[in-house]
Image 1: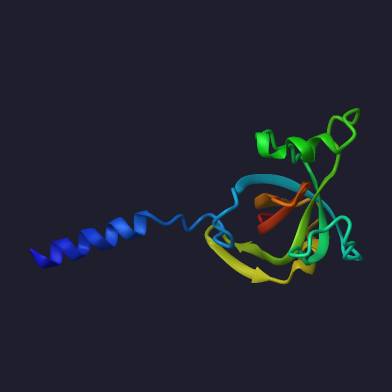
Image 2: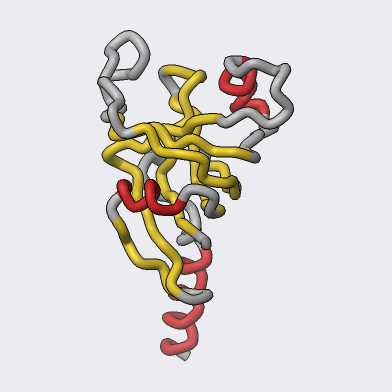
Length: 147
């Protein structure tokens, strides 16, 4: 009987965690998307007027087919010119961002963020969040290069 109770407790606790979503900041809402990598802008200055103090920007990942529609992204989407039906949109690659490349169908390999430069036109799987201090900024917490 004791073994059954322990097994049920373990199952319950493992079901309470979401291993697919990033766990950096529990106060943030994370959204999952796929988009096409357009380019990576690596010479980004840490502009104190634009970037909050807690956001250490490494680069801007430019994406195509990235059009989040949740209310969280309203300010972000409105900051782009709407006449272009498919504009490139950027997400911040910060010191918190984890970057992976798929090897086969099920194995993720951790890579440096500069690896994104080699994969323009590839599809990326993204976990992102609107930055709480600047709603025009979307920070990537996990980027996985799919192809």
